[in-house]
Length: 287
Image (cartoon, rainbow, N blue to C red; front, side):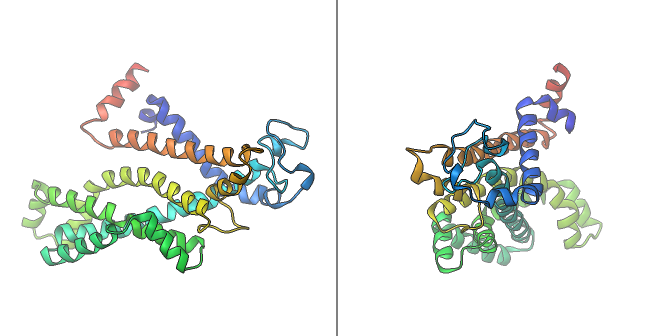
């Protein structure tokens, strides 16, 4: 898989950037938390690409003199943690319900599908706005709301995959040999549907991250002193005409992360499909 990833230079670069963001999320708060929260009014709205105040101010300073580089690195933890938590929760719940709807019987399928229809009847961002307006904006509530809005995506995809896979010969052979329903679902059907779900989850990660940024931009997401990239963009919009870098750099981090996830998702869709993997193998041979 690493050789196939190396063959696609765009996907390899995207994977490298995402690994860098993960390292920032894991170790950034431990190393740069004090610098990200320490105020220095003498460095207020410092221009970028100057080293007069140290390397942390290479991207400039914000309205309170805090280095933007340190704040972007520290904000990566909350941004990625919220997106990852929402995707994992929605993937687990939606896959389980989709397996039940596709294999357990018509009554279960009708109940679960109607539940999905209820969730999908509300625009996801509007539902998140309403719930977060009622509840306290926090990391846990953000993860909960974003996860609920994404469950139907995995539920319907899993059900469609199960309805197709259950008719294959190896599933029918397992039924003839007396395998239990639980074993057929989790040992035979789930491994076949998992590559498709992982590809969707990679792409959905970018959507959830953009949704969290939009909520933070609207002021109902993470609240100070916590920080996310979306909140940094929201705080910098008042200075767009005088200090554009306050909103530009965190916005650029959102764009690059989203683009990297989309590129990696496209690569995974080919790499995990045996009928299309030969394309990457040919690129590897020609490299």
